[in-house]
Length: 324
Picture 1 (cartoon, one colour):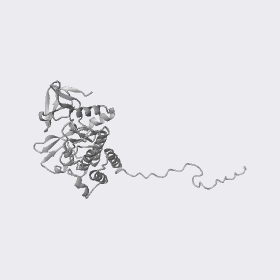
Picture 2 (picture 1 turned 90 degrees about the vertical axis):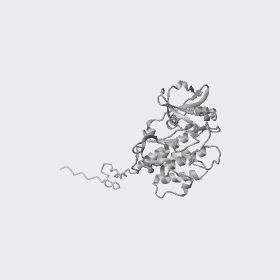
Picture 3 (picture 1 turned 30 degrees about the vertical axis):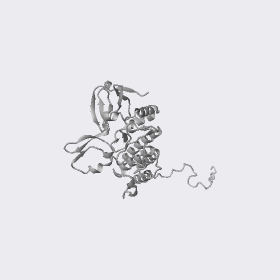
């Protein structure tokens, strides 16, 4: 049964931000919880049964899977009503690990660690006018972020959940306490064979050319997964045209990622999220072994005994000397 709360019961709200469809606010009386309230011009277009089905599906998962997905996606918690009409839902509040100070040196501000800031760091790392505390991941950390994303997509797909809209703004990342990818706008999630809660959409630069106006599906999710991973290692605008122009210099890991992405982006038979997870897990394991010294152990010492020097020769007993 989907849980429901009234807007009035939430008490005082502190606005955090929003877009064309909704406003997100902190619930002052509930630590770590925010509320997303849709704007009046959007509410009549919402499909409540889809959100209820999403909540029920998540609630029906085994405890381990539900906990793992909740760590990596801002899933709806409760429906919010006002005067008997559904207007939004509560959701987890983003923790400090998804923020960093960044901006013009004289006036930096607190910004989200979104995918754009993961893939565009080259634009500011050498700019003396920019102050930034956004961490620059090592290749191993990049692999771990990509693995986190792949595992989340795999779990969602196994549960029958289509992600839908993916972009450089609604996908976040963090390095602490462990490298992680995080889905922010989960009202684009929908159960297979059901419409979306909001009007289906795709973000420019992330559109699947195979859809041709059709609703998003599991395959379009896999296309966007390939884009998201490729853009970590190559360029922020990596896309269908990029697979015919391989980078001139690649590490062993990035070469294998490029080959996997080329197949995922240019083929209608796209590798699933689990195949990405297996590849990335193996590359991380190889990264763990890099630089370790090769230990040449000496051969084991032979067992002690009279036969050790000439094992193939018989032992001839020495004659006893007669007693004098």
